[in-house]
Amino acid sequence: MELETLVPQGQRSMLVNEAILKELALFRRKIQTEKLLVIRNRNPIFSQDDIVKTVRRDRDRG
Image (cartoon, rainbow, N blue to C red; front, side, top):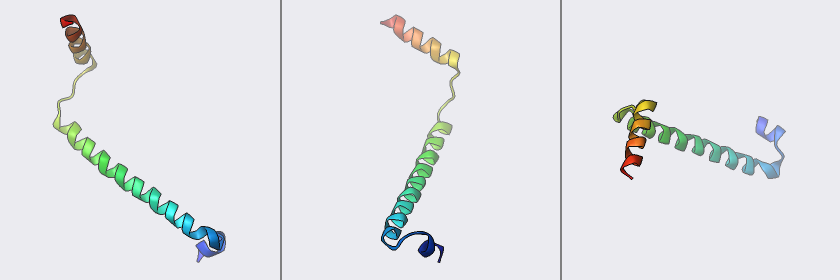
């Protein structure tokens, strides 16, 4: 096995644990990205001009 030849015996479990943590982080990011895309597609898209007009209007209300 390549792991046994490349990684010293005392460091193998640490390497495997780090790899698992990285994969779990990727899974979490993928799930969160999918949720954000659903939210994004559910809401209207505003142009920069729309946002600027709304912010200015709100500031004028004071």
